[in-house]
Structure formats: C-alpha cells, structure tokens
Length: 115
Image (cartoon, rainbow, N blue to C red):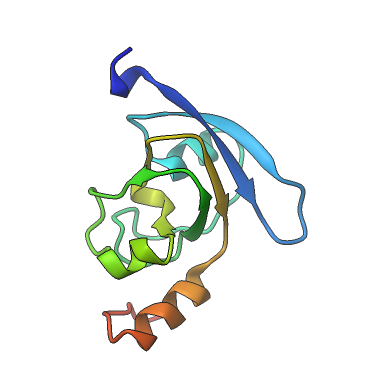
C-alpha cells in the first residue's frame, strides 16, 4: 500500500479527559482529521507558524515538513504542530501544549510568536 493510502490511529491525551482515538490517512494533517471526527482542539494559523495547536508526541512519528516554522529542537523535545503534522506511524499525542512549547522555545532562544 502506498504511504499516502495508509491510515494510522491517532490517540489524543488531554488533561482531565479520557483518551480518544480516530483514524488519520498518512496524507492528511492530524488537526484536520481530528476536527473531521468532532474533536475540539485549539488552532489558529493552520500553517505551522503560531504554535496554538502544539502537542507533545508521546508515541509515534510525524512528518512536520509542511510547517512554516518548526525547529529541530522542537522535534528533539517531541513537540508537534498538529495543523501541519502528518502521521508516519500510529500516534499518541498530549494536546494543549502551547505554553510548554513557548517556554521551550524561549529557553533555547528560538522564535516565539506573539500572543
């Protein structure tokens, strides 16, 4: 099966809520698949720029190449931008990580969006 035809299971871990899962094709962004399945997640720019949709990868692997601003240091700390992340394996993602990603970037002298 071609990579673009594959589908992966995405499990979202949100503080105070039960873990929830949904399918996501390899060619689709995780955020869009989540929205299509009725999940209410924060987002703004849809370009991998603003970090509003930040999550932390607990398991799996993503392709973040569509992001406008995503650093190797972000990946090394397992941060993901859901709006531009395509799954490459089944994923477990902790949601609502904007403030943690902001602090991570500030500590490393990386660009941080205002707001």
